[in-house]
Image (spheres, rainbow, N blue to C red):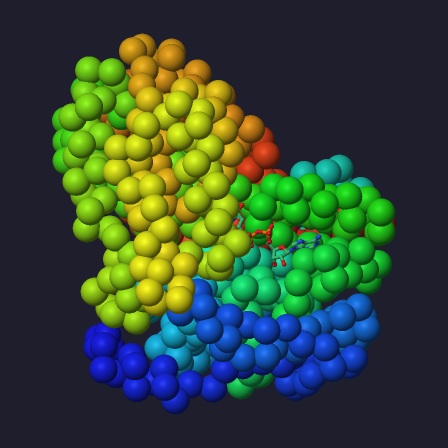
Length: 499
Ligand code: NAD
């Protein structure tokens, strides 16, 4: 396995081609109207390249090609075992180009090369392989109907899927949609976030090289209001698979209603509680995991453990432990494989984080550590790991998703109080529970309204077999697991009369 070496990283980075065009019908091309947007790196605030910006006519073209190929059946009717071979080849090609793809994501959104290379890329490859491997092992059903009929219950691809994804794990979040959508026989149009288009553009050619027929997969870099909205309103798109903010998720639902009632799958934001009971028997492990849960990936994580809810008896001791660990989680050079954290995606997001820190202070919370923009001399956008104490759950910093390295800490006395604080949120993506009492752990898991509950761990691993998704305003549907296939399939009932 390739080991990361700083010199090698810089050498590859200095010789990188920066992907910049739309990918439609198996070819890279400029947008029809030759519109562009500037792509900037948050590592140093400098322009990386000029990227073709997909407009409504580009969306029409990609959808036309996607629909044509879907109807011809070159991919949708291919035996699953053949589709599997192409996706397994795609996974191999990603492994071949792993360092290049890792660097594209690091340059685009500022996260560390250690994160992209050792986490995002291997988990993306695993996800593709897992979906490739299961598709020829799934069977359809025959109903237990009367002897006069045979009822076949089969699943068919939904048609043309548009995947609209965010910037926090550019390639990985795209793969979570693309792998299950392609393996089930759909045509897929990927719209990456405008902040991080390059790895998405690059995989267009990798899928072609793997043998995917032209037109099945397109990539349309562009923004939300033009490119994303055109996709959502398009009458020839059958499903939008969306990951992003709740605000935009609600718009996607509206666009579906205004157009063709296309299916909508949403993975949205969170404000996830992480509860530390006073009988937790390894406070050091809990503190380490709690720090990682909010400061990993610069806190730009949908399921970040951003509300730490600690029993009053151990509150001071525990917060001190987390604060001490956070000192080793300061941002530094994202290209250095030893760095823990990198840059915040752009100046707008940096300002948003800073604004919330100021709101928190005004609301009466106190800063235990951090609270400042840092590394200004780089020209990039960096923020210190920050911990707020004396937070009450009605404050904005406890209710709204900050999407940065800012931890709010709250306290409780009883089990009921802890659960009530945990559930007092519009979100329900994830939660953590730390206790040595198995009964308390299971009761908490049952009572917390969230799609995922971590017991005595917090997001220590990601596993393609385990679905991820939200209760409440954290989303609709699931990524990962068998459950994600349901987003991209529809059920056909066939009645056969037996005479
Ligand atoms: P965002 O909602 O601003 O953008 C997400 C995508 O939607 C981008 O591609 C953007 O261009 C597009 N978009 C924006 N406006 C649009 C419109 N009007 N019509 C159609 N598309 C539009 O989110 P973001 O800032 O890129 O990402 C951060 C958010 O993503 C956070 O809320 C985070 O919690 C969430 N997220 C959720 C998960 C999950 O699995 N639940 C995973 C990662 C990120």
